[in-house]
Image (cartoon, rainbow, N blue to C red; front, side, top):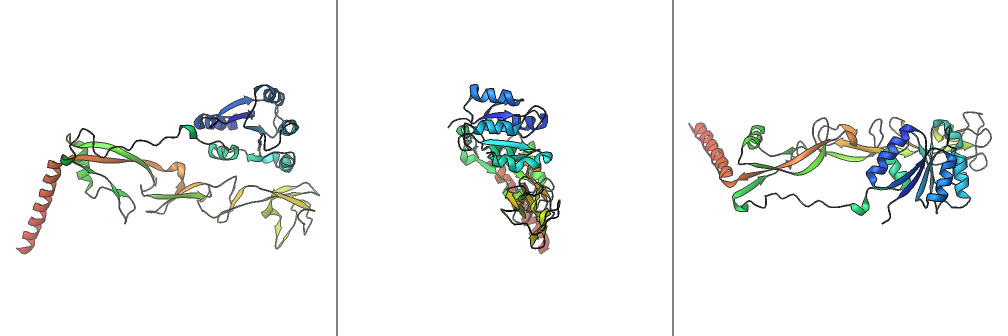
Length: 323
């Protein structure tokens, strides 16, 4: 599988920080240019590239000019071009799509969104499956060692060993008990409960998000979210106030951001949200806590001793009740 190679044409330090970090983490390669003419020369001398990411407009970068130059010799299928736009560039969004841009990336953007828009992924060619961590060490006699592992409590939705905390603490202090990390899981940052994860609104955590179309009104060149044009069952331009707009003759729609149906927050894309099954807390997946799953290898003799103590305690309680 070929490693993705991108041409990045941008001079904005914040977006370049995200891009460089993402390129490094995914194992892709990239050539960076900060001027339009330099990018044109690079395309001729350093290609081929799997995609071009260029800022729409800045002091030294003219994204539309570079896009037109690329489309003179390469189709959108042959060389995808992604344009980075800011709020002030929205008026050029339709022109960019018409000129052959494959997609638009609203700045600021996240590393995850950059991966999705450019089509780069993690290092697929280097993916691996970790060797399972042994429940019992290879050097141990299986008949003489027992491993205590945490299980999910169906009432609290938390991991539990089924014994009091002071017993677990005694295992940590006991030199004859060996602790081994078996895995790591993500849990709720509030209560350490087990969460489910789904995409939702970055502001309120709701899963009820929907795509928000962007309308370009031909007459006055106004560009805005469809919701700002909506007036009852018809569409009306909020800028020039023209009513009863007709798709195709009065305006055109392009794909835009996502709007939350619960809080009306608008974002480029939904984010991964955690929902705790225990305390019902909603949180960004990035805020989840990594909880190590520890197995305790307990010698059979100590385990039997603990059982005997438990039986003795039960008998004592029964004798006390009889008397």
